[in-house]
Length: 324
Image 1 (cartoon, rainbow, N blue to C red):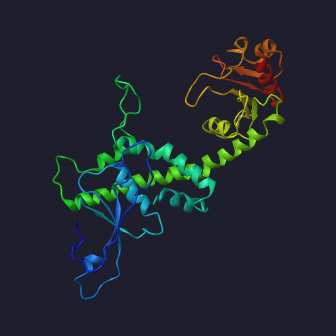
Image 2 (cartoon, helix red, strand yellow):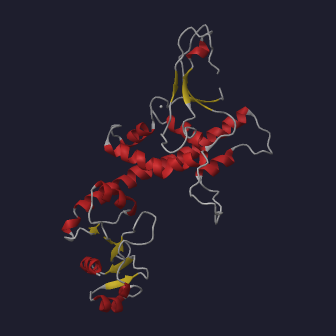
Image 3 (cartoon, rainbow, N blue to C red):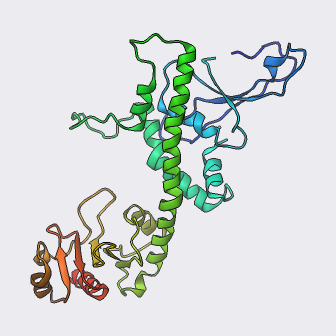
């Protein structure tokens, strides 16, 4: 420890974690601590105003602590803090999200973005640092992954062929903080400016689905948005039963109307109810004749998506597919 053990007053030591990880050991983003440095000035004739410092370990650095140190300086409390690297939980993740959204830290949207950002960004960094395999398999990877954030941070470390000093290591660590921080802010921007509005939009459309078709199994998006990453969670949250089978939306480029089958699960290609086999691989007039629906454009050979020139035509395709 670099704090004077004979300090004449109690020395505050507060240990904080940035984002909590329920699935991994505490090594992840929990490296850093804020240390009151007033004791360092104990023997000075004039005690300068104490500055705040954020401490993390020295030596080779990883993405988790570089990002953690960047993130903690996004908070009001530590925005001007110095970074101290040495060997010698309140959670700030929600505070950072709430500041970015301009909402109270207890707002439901803050919690929603916080959880999504952890799952979509932080968890990977935590897992890589703790040596957690992405898949439960001993099969060798089909290709190498060397461009992900943790790998890029690792390459900022001093090369083993170069002479290394503590000053050089600290300078490179601050470079790593910038790289990790830029990517964090890009992801935070995505989840607040795109992901969150899409979540609310899809939720509203699900609540109105019975007005599109009495079955409740056809979802109409008034405008296209990234819906796949929301529909499964919202079906559970809103107790949707029966599950949604098709999503209708207009293609922005062709202005035709798409009817897309919902997958059986996130990241799966198989659909809950693909479009009819007899339609698959057909186009235009041939498809319209077989389907008995005017304006058909195409149906993919796997049956996961089709298209019609009009909304009514796409809705008819979805309704007929439900009966098949």
